[in-house]
Image (cartoon, rainbow, N blue to C red; front, side, top):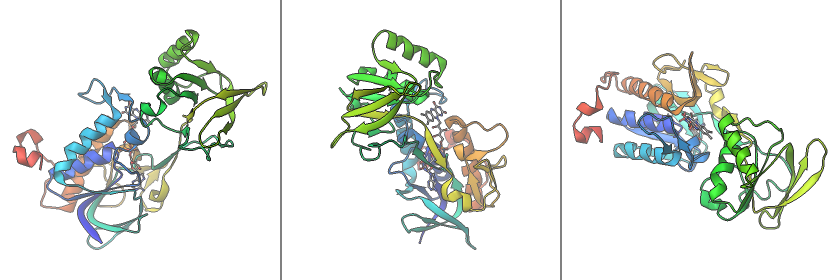
Length: 335
Ligand SMILES: Cc1cc2nc3c(=O)[nH]c(=O)nc-3n(C[C@H](O)[C@H](O)[C@H](O)COP(=O)(O)OP(=O)(O)OC[C@H]3O[C@@H](n4cnc5c(N)ncnc54)[C@H](O)[C@@H]3O)c2cc1C
């Protein structure tokens, strides 16, 4: 059994910033996350997209924001339990016990749940060839644009992700075809207009209402068979990659059984980010309260509240109010 003052469940932006604040209060921290790297949705889903609404950054790549968060937290020597999912949360006499999918048990005096949208996985199409060629030409996210360098890419989807990546990969891919099962796009109006303008200019091909029938290839994707969902007419596209951006399925996962008061699959918190279990706080996309918005900047604010309350719970000699970081000595503000 390994002990820290506070355990943070989920190493997305909210969890990372909460951990930073716990560290600033002089307490030890462990972060647990089933993903192989910190950053949550930013690392897993859109590392190379710009974010425009983080205070103080006119624009910042998602991966750079994560890098900054990890760097800001590093001086406090957080312990990372990556590739591990928190499975159970139990109250004990001394605090809490968290058991993970790796068979480990961690204890702490207070817990912060920053598990985002829970366990998320891409929405698959369920067509022949898709599973077999996953990672060998079938992708559900763009990890690096370089993966698509010089490739003929079929993008499937009609939301922001599909439309944004179709535009974003124009300077990287050899050829892009985007198909969507409806004539209307769900993406922002301005991006959709730009997509259609680029298609008119011949920069890429947009086909609606088309769907994928099957994906073919021996070792890698070689072609995709698509069909018009009204006329059933089939077309064969010679492609090197199929990028399926049809959204994500989210499951609360094990959290649902931890006895926390929930509302519509979100953890209910009060204004101190306290959950219904004393000593367990929460922040980020996982929480709900009147007026909640699922935005990174709100997650940061909630993380600061959750962390300072959790710190005072874990060590009652601490005040909740951390004071101003600018008034701390250089060593203390960065550990
Ligand atoms: C394509 C896209 C673009 C976006 N653009 C913007 C934008 O421009 N501006 C903006 O403000 N927001 C944007 N968002 C939303 C933003 O990414 C989220 O609001 C943010 O990631 C929430 O942070 P979080 O830390 O609460 O959760 P997440 O980033 O979801 O991180 C939660 C972490 O918890 C982990 N976890 C889940 N269950 C467990 C468990 N049982 N045990 C341990 N760990 C667990 C997950 O693996 C994950 O790493 C965008 C989202 C997407 C998908």
